[in-house]
Image 1 (spheres, chains in turn purple, red):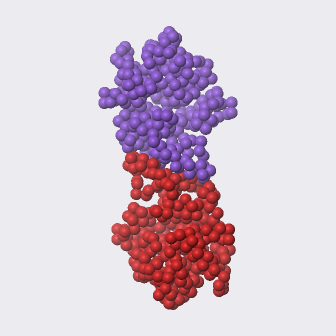
Image 2: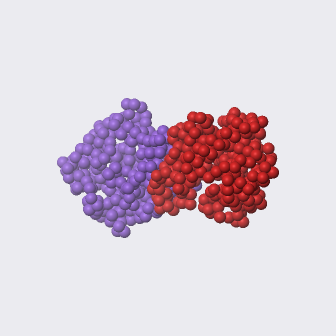
Length: 302
Length: 302
């Protein structure tokens, strides 16, 4: 989604506020998977096949780590490792994660502004039938194959939204809630103290895009979590969940043509439904959806 | 030299006590260049062309670090990086460098025991006409192209020789001072408090091998340092330096056939001269020299 806006070039002054609650420390390295995925995508170096990591990656360090008996469940490519090394090193020098992210994106020539949701440490924990698990333990090591019964974001109460994130949201002409997992990707961002208030106070419309298309998540465990955490399913279920969890957040809810039948339910949830093609296999698709969503910022601003 | 003894297999119970005063921290990683070079060599994965690092290395992380504007003067290969990551991670878990080295060598299937000279942090600093420099700054970044006027080993006064190193030396049947740089490789080891005493008290003979052959160092700045720090040159100069700096340390001093004319000077320095081929281009050469040196342990034990 962010890629689509970035593809529109200088016409769009793009800021992406990114979830950091699934960050982890491994081998002493500060790893920010969501920030990295967005950064690599906007830099044009993302690995399109895996959906994470860097294109043309090599795996020499991982092979050697395995030889040493080190942990291999979280696969670290050699190029990716450099990102974590620089991040860790810059953080250790006293830079905030916001500043480090600026340095990293600048190194990769990313024009959009990438902002961590907070410079504080927040960590998602997930309760399954097996007990509480760290997010990446659940997501990567166990391949999110357990039912999610409960979530908590450790550190969220004392976390602070950054001046940069609050400023960008306050000044935005359009706020888009990406078609990401409402519980573990969007949820932590909205849970940062002050975040909902600044979105509520912003003059911009808020457009959310459904992460569920034709009943299933485009990627990952969003559909399963929607069922176990909210007792819902489908794009309409996402709309009802957002309406219930964040009553005044969203103005327009975009669903795929496959879910056109959900439009009435989206309206009943209190959102203006918008139906279009939301699957984005090509850059042209991404540009087209971004352009359509941008057009929503000019309509019915309240 | 250590490789030669290792090539003799189970006939030799080999312990290598290694200099750690040229260790450094880079990107937050604990790097031990001397330990790694010995470890990679004994594991059969050393890069013979460069004399450091791992064979069949890839450089993806280094390329990415350069893109981020990170330091590139100390080249970190991807496989090598895994060693530093594991070391850093294991040290952070509370293991000593001795224990970490055991874990690393075990991972690479090294049979010899590798021991850091100390688990304490000791750092060589080098004074040149440009002032005091950290060792790797002098050695790698500036390619040791400055005259060395003075040395100091920060932390050496409070460093402690490990029980393992003291135990191995005390129980040794033969102690070999490797043909390494007497000032910055051998020197720090002998400067660790307690080290000279335990060697002096050991019943084993001490055989030193000249690092200078035909007037020049086999590798590195040893010949230049011999000139600027001791006003000496040649294999005989090394013998005189050792005799002056460590009066009772050495029993036998091995010089290359190219330096046969130095035998009298070696004798005058108080050492029993031993003349043989000390250049070791092949494994056969290494085995042969190791066998010859082992034979010295049976002669004239006092």
